[in-house]
Image (cartoon, rainbow over all chains, first blue to last red; front, side, top):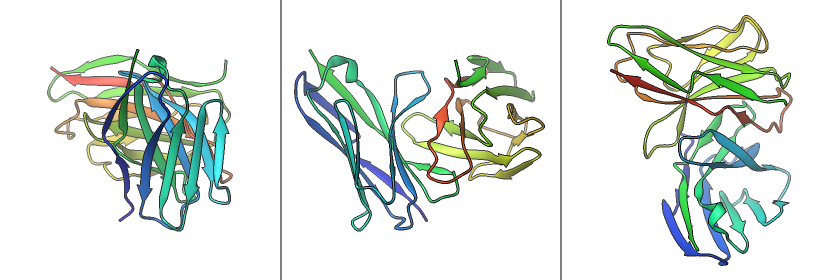
Length: 111
Length: 113
């Protein structure tokens, strides 16, 4: 059974810290790995998509990496801000379009 | 603006009632999906459609039905057979060409009263 796990479930940091969110997956035949942000009561906003042939993607202060051999992806957030407070979800796609989600990491950045 | 529109934002259902959640997209995407999100859990796939007039069951399809008569629309009906329908429902779409990025609507919160 394909599974995606995110650790930690919750994280609280002071403003300005660099931080890493972790995502592990069991399916080595991964096609894409996508990171999302979800604000309370809202839908998901796509942050980064890493194709299986890529090792990382960057967007502004965000950098996501993918290591298929170890079944891991990390989302690095540089110089965190209170506006980064949200739940971050990773999801894998095995080329079916059906995303398998982790349970998310809820991030709180304190001013 | 291109995107996915879900309506209504909040929906209340009485016991034994069927309700339909709307999902419309103007991204010209072939594939559309319905997910359910419960507190403390990740998203679980209910149904998906990769082309008009075709759809497949996801992991938790029991008590739900869908139709895909138009490329832009993928409505979800929560039937009375769904015993625990209170949840947050999210619709998504993507292209069907591989290495696809999924885009989500703002969700519908369904509550049984």
